[in-house]
Amino acid sequence: MQPRYEAELFVAFAEGLLTREEAERFREERREDGPGPLEWLREQGRLSEETLVALRRQVDERPGEQRVVAQEDGTATLTGPPKPDSPQVPDFPLPGWDRYQVSRFLGQGAMGQVYLAHDPRLNRKVALKLLRHEDPDRVRRLISEARAQARVSHERVCKVYEVGEAGGKVFIAMQYVDGQPLDRVASGLSVEQKAILIRDAAEGVHEAHRAGLIHRDLKPSNLMVETTGDGGQRLYVMDFGLARDWDGNATLEGSVVGTPHYMSPEQARGEVSRLDRRTDVYALGATLYALLAGQPPIPGENALEIVGRIATEEPRRLRELDPDIPADLEAITLKCLEKDRSARYDSARALAEDLDRFLSGEPVRARPTGLGYRLRKKARKHWLAMSLATLALLLVAGALGWAGFTRQEAARHEFLVRRFTEKVERIEALARYSGLSRLHDVRADHAEIRRHMAELEAEIQQAGAV
Image (cartoon, rainbow, N blue to C red):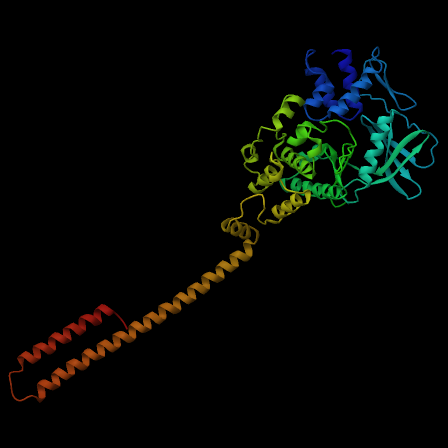
Protein backbone atom coordinates (compact mmCIF):
# COMPACT_ATOMS: atom_id res chain seq x y z
CA MET A 1 0.00 0.00 0.00
CA GLN A 2 1.17 3.54 -0.76
CA PRO A 3 2.89 5.30 2.18
CA ARG A 4 0.29 8.05 2.07
CA TYR A 5 -2.51 5.49 2.25
CA GLU A 6 -0.80 3.95 5.26
CA ALA A 7 -0.66 7.38 6.90
CA GLU A 8 -4.33 8.03 6.13
CA LEU A 9 -5.23 4.59 7.46
CA PHE A 10 -3.55 5.29 10.76
CA VAL A 11 -5.14 8.73 11.07
CA ALA A 12 -8.57 7.19 10.40
CA PHE A 13 -7.93 4.55 13.04
CA ALA A 14 -6.63 7.10 15.57
CA GLU A 15 -9.74 9.22 14.98
CA GLY A 16 -11.98 6.25 15.74
CA LEU A 17 -13.33 6.19 12.18
CA LEU A 18 -12.10 2.65 11.49
CA THR A 19 -11.88 -0.42 13.70
CA ARG A 20 -8.76 -2.59 13.64
CA GLU A 21 -10.64 -5.19 11.60
CA GLU A 22 -11.76 -2.61 9.04
CA ALA A 23 -8.25 -1.17 8.80
CA GLU A 24 -6.70 -4.59 8.19
CA ARG A 25 -9.41 -5.48 5.66
CA PHE A 26 -8.85 -2.21 3.84
CA ARG A 27 -5.11 -2.93 3.65
CA GLU A 28 -5.74 -6.40 2.23
CA GLU A 29 -8.51 -5.61 -0.26
CA ARG A 30 -7.95 -2.07 -1.50
CA ARG A 31 -6.24 -1.60 -4.88
CA GLU A 32 -3.38 0.86 -5.25
CA ASP A 33 -5.33 2.85 -7.84
CA GLY A 34 -8.50 2.94 -5.73
CA PRO A 35 -9.59 5.70 -3.34
CA GLY A 36 -7.54 6.17 -0.18
CA PRO A 37 -8.94 5.42 3.29
CA LEU A 38 -10.18 8.96 3.94
CA GLU A 39 -11.82 9.28 0.53
CA TRP A 40 -13.41 5.85 0.99
CA LEU A 41 -14.83 6.90 4.36
CA ARG A 42 -16.32 9.99 2.79
CA GLU A 43 -17.91 7.91 0.02
CA GLN A 44 -19.43 5.68 2.68
CA GLY A 45 -21.02 8.71 4.34
CA ARG A 46 -18.94 8.25 7.50
CA LEU A 47 -16.90 11.40 7.02
CA SER A 48 -18.06 14.92 6.22
CA GLU A 49 -16.34 17.06 3.59
CA GLU A 50 -15.06 19.48 6.22
CA THR A 51 -13.61 16.69 8.38
CA LEU A 52 -11.98 15.14 5.32
CA VAL A 53 -10.16 18.41 4.61
CA ALA A 54 -9.01 18.66 8.23
CA LEU A 55 -7.69 15.10 8.33
CA ARG A 56 -5.89 15.48 5.02
CA ARG A 57 -4.25 18.58 6.47
CA GLN A 58 -2.88 16.42 9.28
CA VAL A 59 -1.34 13.99 6.79
CA ASP A 60 0.07 16.82 4.66
CA GLU A 61 1.72 18.65 7.55
CA ARG A 62 4.70 16.25 7.51
CA PRO A 63 4.91 15.05 3.89
CA GLY A 64 8.29 13.35 4.29
CA GLU A 65 7.20 11.15 7.16
CA GLN A 66 4.82 8.29 7.40
CA ARG A 67 3.64 7.73 10.97
CA VAL A 68 1.37 9.63 13.34
CA VAL A 69 2.88 10.31 16.76
CA ALA A 70 1.32 12.52 19.44
CA GLN A 71 3.47 15.43 20.62
CA GLU A 72 3.51 17.03 24.06
CA ASP A 73 1.39 19.93 22.86
CA GLY A 74 -1.28 17.56 21.56
CA THR A 75 -0.47 17.96 17.86
CA ALA A 76 0.25 15.01 15.56
CA THR A 77 3.15 14.28 13.20
CA LEU A 78 4.04 11.44 10.81
CA THR A 79 7.25 9.53 11.58
CA GLY A 80 7.13 6.02 10.13
CA PRO A 81 4.93 3.24 8.75
CA PRO A 82 1.74 3.19 10.83
CA LYS A 83 0.43 0.09 12.51
CA PRO A 84 -3.31 0.16 13.13
CA ASP A 85 -3.00 -2.27 16.02
CA SER A 86 -0.74 0.04 18.06
CA PRO A 87 -2.00 3.63 17.91
CA GLN A 88 -0.26 6.27 19.96
CA VAL A 89 -2.34 7.68 22.83
CA PRO A 90 -1.72 11.40 23.25
CA ASP A 91 -0.75 12.71 26.67
CA PHE A 92 -3.06 15.18 28.34
CA PRO A 93 -1.75 18.60 27.24
CA LEU A 94 -2.35 20.34 30.58
CA PRO A 95 -0.27 18.46 33.20
CA GLY A 96 -0.85 19.53 36.79
CA TRP A 97 -4.24 21.12 36.03
CA ASP A 98 -6.31 21.01 39.22
CA ARG A 99 -9.72 22.02 37.81
CA TYR A 100 -10.40 18.53 36.51
CA GLN A 101 -8.78 15.21 37.35
CA VAL A 102 -8.18 13.43 34.04
CA SER A 103 -8.66 9.65 34.04
CA ARG A 104 -8.04 8.50 30.48
CA PHE A 105 -8.07 9.38 26.81
CA LEU A 106 -11.40 8.69 25.08
CA GLY A 107 -10.77 9.65 21.46
CA GLN A 108 -10.27 12.49 19.04
CA GLY A 109 -11.87 14.11 16.07
CA ALA A 110 -10.75 16.53 13.41
CA MET A 111 -10.94 19.41 15.88
CA GLY A 112 -10.21 18.15 19.36
CA GLN A 113 -9.19 15.45 21.76
CA VAL A 114 -11.59 14.09 24.35
CA TYR A 115 -10.64 12.84 27.81
CA LEU A 116 -12.61 11.31 30.65
CA ALA A 117 -12.18 13.38 33.80
CA HIS A 118 -13.60 13.90 37.28
CA ASP A 119 -14.98 17.22 38.43
CA PRO A 120 -14.02 17.45 42.13
CA ARG A 121 -16.20 20.50 42.73
CA LEU A 122 -19.44 18.81 41.71
CA ASN A 123 -18.28 15.20 42.14
CA ARG A 124 -19.22 13.96 38.68
CA LYS A 125 -17.64 12.50 35.57
CA VAL A 126 -17.19 14.78 32.59
CA ALA A 127 -15.94 14.47 29.03
CA LEU A 128 -13.28 17.14 28.39
CA LYS A 129 -12.80 18.29 24.82
CA LEU A 130 -9.67 20.29 23.96
CA LEU A 131 -8.39 21.65 20.68
CA ARG A 132 -5.44 19.88 19.17
CA HIS A 133 -4.50 22.83 16.93
CA GLU A 134 -4.61 26.36 18.20
CA ASP A 135 -5.91 28.08 15.15
CA PRO A 136 -8.47 30.92 15.47
CA ASP A 137 -10.99 29.29 13.16
CA ARG A 138 -10.94 26.07 15.15
CA VAL A 139 -11.23 27.96 18.41
CA ARG A 140 -14.28 29.75 17.04
CA ARG A 141 -15.75 26.45 15.88
CA LEU A 142 -15.27 24.79 19.27
CA ILE A 143 -16.79 27.70 21.20
CA SER A 144 -19.70 27.95 18.76
CA GLU A 145 -20.38 24.24 19.17
CA ALA A 146 -20.37 24.54 22.95
CA ARG A 147 -22.59 27.61 22.99
CA ALA A 148 -25.04 25.98 20.62
CA GLN A 149 -25.23 22.79 22.65
CA ALA A 150 -25.40 24.65 25.99
CA ARG A 151 -28.58 26.41 24.83
CA VAL A 152 -30.44 23.11 24.70
CA SER A 153 -31.67 21.73 28.01
CA HIS A 154 -33.21 18.32 27.49
CA GLU A 155 -32.62 14.84 28.85
CA ARG A 156 -31.99 13.54 25.31
CA VAL A 157 -29.27 16.08 24.49
CA CYS A 158 -25.73 15.77 25.82
CA LYS A 159 -25.28 18.61 28.34
CA VAL A 160 -22.49 21.19 28.21
CA TYR A 161 -21.35 22.09 31.72
CA GLU A 162 -18.58 24.59 31.14
CA VAL A 163 -16.59 26.38 28.44
CA GLY A 164 -13.28 27.89 29.42
CA GLU A 165 -9.57 28.33 28.79
CA ALA A 166 -6.60 26.88 30.64
CA GLY A 167 -2.93 27.05 29.74
CA GLY A 168 -3.81 28.75 26.47
CA LYS A 169 -6.16 25.95 25.47
CA VAL A 170 -9.92 26.24 25.07
CA PHE A 171 -11.89 23.38 26.62
CA ILE A 172 -15.46 22.19 26.90
CA ALA A 173 -16.65 20.14 29.87
CA MET A 174 -19.59 17.99 28.77
CA GLN A 175 -21.78 15.27 30.17
CA TYR A 176 -19.98 11.93 29.96
CA VAL A 177 -22.07 9.41 28.02
CA ASP A 178 -20.81 5.88 28.58
CA GLY A 179 -22.27 4.39 25.43
CA GLN A 180 -21.81 3.64 21.75
CA PRO A 181 -23.01 5.33 18.55
CA LEU A 182 -26.40 4.15 17.37
CA ASP A 183 -25.03 2.56 14.20
CA ARG A 184 -22.84 0.22 16.27
CA VAL A 185 -25.69 -1.13 18.38
CA ALA A 186 -28.41 -1.14 15.71
CA SER A 187 -27.96 -4.78 14.72
CA GLY A 188 -29.02 -5.94 18.17
CA LEU A 189 -32.19 -3.83 18.33
CA SER A 190 -35.75 -4.79 17.47
CA VAL A 191 -37.90 -2.69 15.13
CA GLU A 192 -39.76 -1.28 18.13
CA GLN A 193 -36.51 -0.37 19.93
CA LYS A 194 -35.26 1.46 16.84
CA ALA A 195 -38.52 3.40 16.66
CA ILE A 196 -38.26 4.28 20.35
CA LEU A 197 -34.71 5.59 20.00
CA ILE A 198 -35.54 7.75 16.98
CA ARG A 199 -38.57 9.05 18.86
CA ASP A 200 -36.27 10.00 21.76
CA ALA A 201 -33.85 11.65 19.33
CA ALA A 202 -36.73 13.61 17.76
CA GLU A 203 -37.77 14.90 21.19
CA GLY A 204 -34.22 16.12 21.87
CA VAL A 205 -33.95 17.69 18.42
CA HIS A 206 -37.30 19.43 18.94
CA GLU A 207 -35.89 21.07 22.06
CA ALA A 208 -32.91 22.25 20.01
CA HIS A 209 -35.34 23.74 17.50
CA ARG A 210 -37.14 25.52 20.32
CA ALA A 211 -33.79 26.97 21.34
CA GLY A 212 -33.42 28.30 17.79
CA LEU A 213 -30.97 25.73 16.42
CA ILE A 214 -30.91 23.41 13.43
CA HIS A 215 -28.49 20.53 13.95
CA ARG A 216 -27.72 19.90 10.23
CA ASP A 217 -25.65 16.77 10.85
CA LEU A 218 -27.98 14.23 12.42
CA LYS A 219 -26.93 10.67 11.65
CA PRO A 220 -26.49 7.38 13.56
CA SER A 221 -22.92 8.17 14.61
CA ASN A 222 -24.08 11.42 16.25
CA LEU A 223 -26.68 9.63 18.36
CA MET A 224 -25.09 7.98 21.39
CA VAL A 225 -26.83 5.04 23.09
CA GLU A 226 -26.13 4.30 26.73
CA THR A 227 -27.28 1.11 28.44
CA THR A 228 -29.21 1.74 31.65
CA GLY A 229 -29.06 -0.31 34.83
CA ASP A 230 -32.25 -2.19 33.96
CA GLY A 231 -30.95 -3.21 30.54
CA GLY A 232 -32.77 -0.49 28.61
CA GLN A 233 -31.30 2.14 26.30
CA ARG A 234 -30.95 5.87 26.80
CA LEU A 235 -30.18 8.01 23.77
CA TYR A 236 -28.32 11.34 23.56
CA VAL A 237 -28.06 13.73 20.63
CA MET A 238 -24.39 14.72 20.23
CA ASP A 239 -22.16 17.01 18.19
CA PHE A 240 -23.70 20.39 17.46
CA GLY A 241 -20.60 21.43 15.51
CA LEU A 242 -22.68 22.20 12.38
CA ALA A 243 -25.63 23.70 14.23
CA ARG A 244 -27.15 26.79 12.63
CA ASP A 245 -29.17 29.60 14.21
CA TRP A 246 -32.61 30.46 12.91
CA ASP A 247 -31.26 33.94 12.17
CA GLY A 248 -28.81 32.46 9.68
CA ASN A 249 -25.62 32.56 11.75
CA ALA A 250 -24.09 29.15 11.18
CA THR A 251 -21.29 27.69 13.23
CA LEU A 252 -19.72 26.47 10.01
CA GLU A 253 -19.48 28.63 6.93
CA GLY A 254 -19.97 27.17 3.46
CA SER A 255 -22.80 26.26 1.20
CA VAL A 256 -22.91 22.46 1.53
CA VAL A 257 -22.21 20.94 4.94
CA GLY A 258 -23.27 17.70 6.56
CA THR A 259 -23.04 14.01 5.73
CA PRO A 260 -24.28 13.21 2.19
CA HIS A 261 -26.38 10.14 3.03
CA TYR A 262 -28.40 12.13 5.58
CA MET A 263 -28.69 15.50 3.81
CA SER A 264 -32.07 16.89 2.84
CA PRO A 265 -32.50 17.98 -0.81
CA GLU A 266 -32.36 21.67 0.11
CA GLN A 267 -29.23 21.05 2.18
CA ALA A 268 -27.58 19.14 -0.67
CA ARG A 269 -28.32 22.06 -3.02
CA GLY A 270 -26.57 24.43 -0.63
CA GLU A 271 -29.71 26.50 0.00
CA VAL A 272 -28.50 27.73 3.38
CA SER A 273 -31.16 30.42 3.71
CA ARG A 274 -33.95 27.86 3.24
CA LEU A 275 -32.84 25.43 5.92
CA ASP A 276 -35.29 25.02 8.78
CA ARG A 277 -36.30 22.37 11.28
CA ARG A 278 -37.69 20.17 8.49
CA THR A 279 -34.09 19.65 7.38
CA ASP A 280 -33.47 17.81 10.65
CA VAL A 281 -36.75 15.92 10.23
CA TYR A 282 -35.38 14.59 6.91
CA ALA A 283 -32.13 13.52 8.61
CA LEU A 284 -34.04 11.72 11.35
CA GLY A 285 -36.05 9.91 8.69
CA ALA A 286 -32.87 8.98 6.81
CA THR A 287 -31.41 7.66 10.05
CA LEU A 288 -34.52 5.58 10.75
CA TYR A 289 -34.44 4.28 7.17
CA ALA A 290 -30.78 3.24 7.55
CA LEU A 291 -31.55 1.46 10.84
CA LEU A 292 -34.50 -0.46 9.38
CA ALA A 293 -33.07 -1.26 5.94
CA GLY A 294 -29.40 -1.62 6.79
CA GLN A 295 -28.56 0.88 4.03
CA PRO A 296 -29.03 4.62 3.47
CA PRO A 297 -32.11 5.84 1.59
CA ILE A 298 -30.11 7.23 -1.36
CA PRO A 299 -27.18 5.03 -2.44
CA GLY A 300 -24.11 6.21 -4.27
CA GLU A 301 -20.47 5.40 -4.93
CA ASN A 302 -19.20 8.77 -3.73
CA ALA A 303 -20.36 11.96 -2.05
CA LEU A 304 -20.85 13.86 -5.31
CA GLU A 305 -23.05 11.13 -6.75
CA ILE A 306 -25.14 10.93 -3.56
CA VAL A 307 -25.65 14.70 -3.40
CA GLY A 308 -26.72 14.69 -7.06
CA ARG A 309 -29.28 11.94 -6.49
CA ILE A 310 -30.89 13.29 -3.34
CA ALA A 311 -33.00 15.93 -5.11
CA THR A 312 -34.43 13.59 -7.78
CA GLU A 313 -34.22 9.94 -6.74
CA GLU A 314 -36.86 8.44 -4.47
CA PRO A 315 -35.75 5.90 -1.85
CA ARG A 316 -36.94 2.33 -2.28
CA ARG A 317 -39.92 1.41 -0.16
CA LEU A 318 -38.77 -0.28 3.02
CA ARG A 319 -41.21 -3.17 2.67
CA GLU A 320 -39.66 -4.04 -0.69
CA LEU A 321 -36.38 -4.57 1.16
CA ASP A 322 -37.94 -6.26 4.18
CA PRO A 323 -41.65 -7.26 4.12
CA ASP A 324 -41.62 -7.64 7.91
CA ILE A 325 -41.24 -3.89 8.45
CA PRO A 326 -44.63 -2.54 9.63
CA ALA A 327 -46.50 -0.54 7.01
CA ASP A 328 -47.13 2.31 9.46
CA LEU A 329 -43.43 2.63 10.27
CA GLU A 330 -42.60 2.64 6.57
CA ALA A 331 -45.14 5.44 6.05
CA ILE A 332 -43.61 7.50 8.88
CA THR A 333 -40.11 7.08 7.48
CA LEU A 334 -41.07 7.98 3.92
CA LYS A 335 -43.01 11.03 5.09
CA CYS A 336 -39.80 12.33 6.68
CA LEU A 337 -37.98 11.76 3.37
CA GLU A 338 -40.36 13.73 1.16
CA LYS A 339 -38.54 15.95 -1.36
CA ASP A 340 -41.07 18.72 -0.78
CA ARG A 341 -40.48 20.16 2.68
CA SER A 342 -44.18 20.96 3.13
CA ALA A 343 -45.03 17.25 2.80
CA ARG A 344 -42.76 16.27 5.72
CA TYR A 345 -43.66 16.52 9.37
CA ASP A 346 -43.57 20.21 10.22
CA SER A 347 -41.55 19.57 13.38
CA ALA A 348 -39.48 16.92 15.10
CA ARG A 349 -42.13 16.86 17.80
CA ALA A 350 -44.78 15.88 15.23
CA LEU A 351 -42.52 13.01 14.16
CA ALA A 352 -42.07 11.92 17.79
CA GLU A 353 -45.85 11.97 18.31
CA ASP A 354 -46.47 9.82 15.22
CA LEU A 355 -43.85 7.33 16.37
CA ASP A 356 -45.65 7.25 19.72
CA ARG A 357 -48.87 6.45 17.88
CA PHE A 358 -47.15 3.61 16.04
CA LEU A 359 -45.71 2.22 19.28
CA SER A 360 -49.14 2.46 20.95
CA GLY A 361 -50.95 0.81 18.05
CA GLU A 362 -52.90 3.97 17.23
CA PRO A 363 -53.56 5.21 13.66
CA VAL A 364 -50.55 7.21 12.41
CA ARG A 365 -50.92 10.49 10.58
CA ALA A 366 -48.45 9.46 7.91
CA ARG A 367 -51.14 7.23 6.35
CA PRO A 368 -54.67 7.99 5.08
CA THR A 369 -56.98 7.68 8.07
CA GLY A 370 -60.30 6.43 6.67
CA LEU A 371 -62.91 4.80 8.90
CA GLY A 372 -61.85 1.28 7.94
CA TYR A 373 -58.17 1.98 8.72
CA ARG A 374 -59.05 3.50 12.11
CA LEU A 375 -61.31 0.59 13.02
CA ARG A 376 -58.61 -1.93 12.09
CA LYS A 377 -56.04 -0.11 14.21
CA LYS A 378 -58.44 0.07 17.15
CA ALA A 379 -59.26 -3.60 16.79
CA ARG A 380 -55.58 -4.61 16.70
CA LYS A 381 -54.71 -2.47 19.70
CA HIS A 382 -57.71 -3.45 21.87
CA TRP A 383 -58.17 -6.99 20.59
CA LEU A 384 -59.27 -8.47 23.94
CA ALA A 385 -61.84 -5.77 24.62
CA MET A 386 -62.99 -5.94 20.99
CA SER A 387 -63.34 -9.74 21.24
CA LEU A 388 -65.42 -9.47 24.40
CA ALA A 389 -67.52 -6.67 22.90
CA THR A 390 -68.07 -8.71 19.74
CA LEU A 391 -69.11 -11.72 21.80
CA ALA A 392 -71.49 -9.56 23.81
CA LEU A 393 -72.95 -8.10 20.63
CA LEU A 394 -73.45 -11.57 19.21
CA LEU A 395 -75.20 -12.69 22.39
CA VAL A 396 -77.43 -9.62 22.39
CA ALA A 397 -78.16 -10.06 18.70
CA GLY A 398 -78.98 -13.72 19.32
CA ALA A 399 -81.27 -12.85 22.20
CA LEU A 400 -83.02 -10.17 20.17
CA GLY A 401 -83.33 -12.55 17.22
CA TRP A 402 -84.78 -15.27 19.42
CA ALA A 403 -87.22 -12.81 20.97
CA GLY A 404 -88.30 -11.68 17.52
CA PHE A 405 -88.67 -15.27 16.37
CA THR A 406 -90.69 -16.12 19.46
CA ARG A 407 -92.99 -13.16 18.89
CA GLN A 408 -93.40 -14.14 15.25
CA GLU A 409 -94.21 -17.73 16.20
CA ALA A 410 -96.71 -16.57 18.81
CA ALA A 411 -98.43 -14.35 16.25
CA ARG A 412 -98.52 -17.25 13.77
CA HIS A 413 -99.89 -19.57 16.44
CA GLU A 414 -102.58 -17.05 17.33
CA PHE A 415 -103.50 -16.62 13.64
CA LEU A 416 -103.81 -20.38 13.04
CA VAL A 417 -105.83 -20.96 16.18
CA ARG A 418 -108.21 -18.20 15.16
CA ARG A 419 -108.46 -19.56 11.58
CA PHE A 420 -109.02 -23.15 12.67
CA THR A 421 -111.59 -22.06 15.22
CA GLU A 422 -113.46 -20.17 12.55
CA LYS A 423 -113.44 -23.24 10.27
CA VAL A 424 -114.68 -25.52 13.05
CA GLU A 425 -117.45 -23.08 13.89
CA ARG A 426 -118.41 -22.97 10.21
CA ILE A 427 -118.60 -26.77 10.02
CA GLU A 428 -120.71 -26.85 13.19
CA ALA A 429 -123.01 -24.21 11.68
CA LEU A 430 -123.43 -26.27 8.49
CA ALA A 431 -124.28 -29.40 10.48
CA ARG A 432 -126.69 -27.52 12.72
CA TYR A 433 -128.37 -25.85 9.70
CA SER A 434 -128.79 -29.26 7.99
CA GLY A 435 -130.29 -30.84 11.15
CA LEU A 436 -132.80 -28.05 11.78
CA SER A 437 -133.98 -27.86 8.21
CA ARG A 438 -137.22 -29.62 7.14
CA LEU A 439 -136.91 -33.12 5.89
CA HIS A 440 -134.75 -33.24 2.81
CA ASP A 441 -132.01 -35.22 1.15
CA VAL A 442 -128.97 -34.55 3.43
CA ARG A 443 -126.38 -36.31 1.25
CA ALA A 444 -125.32 -32.99 -0.34
CA ASP A 445 -125.01 -31.41 3.13
CA HIS A 446 -122.86 -34.26 4.37
CA ALA A 447 -120.62 -33.98 1.32
CA GLU A 448 -120.18 -30.24 1.93
CA ILE A 449 -119.35 -30.83 5.59
CA ARG A 450 -116.80 -33.57 4.68
CA ARG A 451 -115.16 -31.23 2.15
CA HIS A 452 -114.71 -28.49 4.78
CA MET A 453 -113.38 -31.04 7.29
CA ALA A 454 -110.85 -32.30 4.73
CA GLU A 455 -109.64 -28.78 4.04
CA LEU A 456 -109.25 -28.13 7.79
CA GLU A 457 -107.30 -31.36 8.24
CA ALA A 458 -104.98 -30.44 5.35
CA GLU A 459 -104.29 -26.97 6.78
CA ILE A 460 -103.59 -28.41 10.22
CA GLN A 461 -101.08 -30.88 8.77
CA GLN A 462 -99.43 -28.12 6.72
CA ALA A 463 -99.14 -25.84 9.77
CA GLY A 464 -97.53 -28.50 11.88
CA ALA A 465 -97.65 -28.39 15.70
CA VAL A 466 -99.15 -25.19 17.08
